[in-house]
Every structure is written in structure tokens, then in C-alpha cells.
Length: 371
Ligand SMILES: CC(C)(COP(=O)(O)OP(=O)(O)OC[C@H]1O[C@@H](n2cnc3c(N)ncnc32)[C@H](O)[C@@H]1OP(=O)(O)O)[C@@H](O)C(=O)NCCC(=O)NCCS
Image (tube, rainbow, N blue to C red; front, side, top):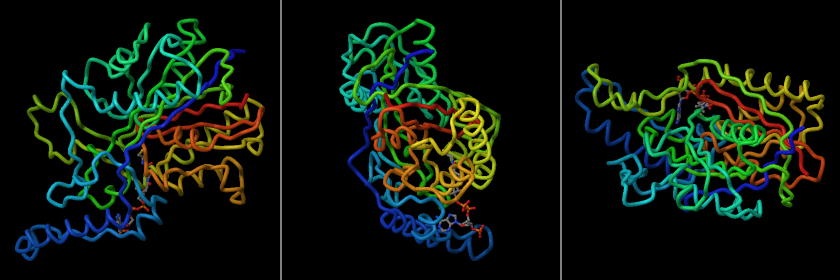
């Protein structure tokens, strides 16, 4: 049996925060502007008028009450409807590396490790900051870490897939201690002019130290990992380095985050519940003995439905399914680690499940035990 641990975790999120009221007010003002500007086309039946969003819908459909974002002003500006960011530039740290360093400092402190203890850095995220050089190598350089570093993309499962890779590298003898970083700066990729998507995402980053034989106070032993992927276009972005040279043109909106939310809901919930249930069964663990399910934070209803399928009842203590989604929105792959970081006060021997899932489709579930 490998003795590999999540030795410590840390989270970072921007100071700026947008409530549902603020977001919906801005969206509805944008709708008025759009409908006024396009009044004659709408009258002639050449264009559909836009409809208002509502705070009640957002809270009922998603469970989200607010989100932390990198640029509130840009997102709420009805003449812009997106955050203002700097282009990638070789003379300064990337936004992903900056967020990663903030989260890494906290994770390293919690794990009681310093840069010279770390053998590798893995960055797992839903959106590549750039094609190369890897953000993981940029962070490695900033921290003065020897060894190797690389980026990986697995949509909203990137966090647990990256922890899984760290585990495998340690188990194979390649490394002893790996820093995993998951920057999810999603808002630049959100179409804030679409009412079924404008409320979903926030920005944030988490880091974790995966280590052989950790003795840190906050350490959790990794008992098992289970991964599954199956192809689906229901969460898709056609953004690509090919866009510039493509001879067939696509509307800009098509390049952003797109999803068929209802299908995702219908298809992913049973997939995840089944995967976790079978994983617990093959590890001889009764679902009732799981103290916390730290699940991907896409939607409050989804989290509750998955937990009720695994536990085979609707009657369970809501405390076992932490929901940072209320405050942070959907944080792409890093939601499950926010849930873990903010709610992992377990006693020695208690077990929990960290599971992220999403685009691909992809699912990775990790069973951990408090040491
Ligand atoms: C996105 C999501 C919250 C939408 O909830 P939903 O209940 O499925 O809502 P729908 O998009 O089907 O819309 C329901 C109705 O509300 C309307 N509506 C959509 N957005 C609205 C808004 N902001 N305000 C008011 N009404 C809205 C729709 O037009 C639709 O109206 P209709 O029934 O007349 O067609 C939900 O589908 C979801 O969370 N899916 C999974 C998300 C996910 O896992 N994403 C992965 C990315 S990591």
C-alpha cells in the first residue's frame, strides 16, 4: 500500500465579489440597451428581443448567490460585459502564475514544506493560459524548485486528474513531493450577455502538496483513485490556435464556454453517482461511513442529487456536502478542492471523497482518510 498524502492545501480568490442582484441588474440594463438599439429589427421580426434574467431563477436553478471575480467593473459595464485583463507578456508573471503562487504559499505552509522539498509542479486547469511555456514551469522558476513541471487540461476534472498524476509519479518513484496547482480564471471566457450562462462562473485557484509519508497535521492519506472519461460535446469551446488560420468563419460566441446545461445535468449526475458508488463498493466502504463528499461545484441541485443517489436517501445531513458554490459560483475544476480546503476538519480515521467532473465528459474521484 502506498503511503501518499494530500499533505496540505491552499486557496486563493480575488477580493472583488459580485452578488446576484448586481449581476442581474447589469444584465437587465444590457437587455434594455440591446432591445432599444435593435428596436426596428425586433419590430420587423428580423431579431428576437432579449429577455430579463432574474435573481430568483439564478438562485433556484444553481444555488449560486455570489461569485469572486478578477474584474467586477468590466463585467458589470454594460458596454463591455467582460473583465479587463492584460495580454500574456514575457516581461511579467501571468495571471495564472500569480494566482498559483498565492495558493501555493498557503498549501506549502500547511504541508510544512519549502521549495527545496518539492520535486515537481503540475498545473491542471480548464483553460490554458497560453500554449507554451507551461505555467507550471513559470511557477517552478518563481519558487526555485528543481525537477520538472508541466501543464495539463482535463476540463472541470483537471484538479483531481492532476492530483492523480502526482500520486502516480510519486508511486512510480519519480518524485517524493509534488506541488499541484489549479488556477481557474474562467470569467474572461464567459459570455456575460447570455442569460443562461452569465451567472455560472467565478474565478479562483487552489494548490495542494502531494507527498509520500507526510506527517503534517492537516494530512489526508489517499486511499484510492478512480477515473473515467466519455466523449460529449455538451460542454464545449471551439477556441483554438487554429482560429486565426481557419478558412471557415465561426461567430465569436462559439469560441467561448458553451454548454447544453440540461443534458449535462441529466447525463453527468448518474455517471458520477455510479462511479463513486462502485469505487466505494470495491474499497469495501459503506457510503454512510463517508464523512464528507467534496464534490465539483457546478450546481447545488446536482451536488444534492449525486449525494442522494450514493447514499440511497434524500434524508442526509447537508453538512456532508459542502457547497462553496453559494459564495464562489462554479469554480470549474477547483470547486471540489475549495470544498475540501474549507471543510476538512475531520478526526483521524474519518474518510471523505474528493470528486471533480465536467467537460469531456471526465470524472476523477479520490477517496481520502484523515491521518
Ligand atoms: C445551467 C443550469 C443552471 C440551468 O438550469 P436549468 O434549470 O436547466 O435551466 P434552463 O437553462 O433549462 O432554463 C429553464 C428556463 O429558464 C430560462 N432561463 C435561463 N436562464 C435564465 C435566467 N438567467 N433568468 C431567468 N430565466 C432564465 C430559460 O430560458 C428556460 O426557459 P424555457 O423553459 O421557457 O425554455 C443547469 O442546467 C446546470 O447547472 N447544468 C449543469 C451545469 C454544469 O454542470 N456545467 C458544467 C460546467 S463545469
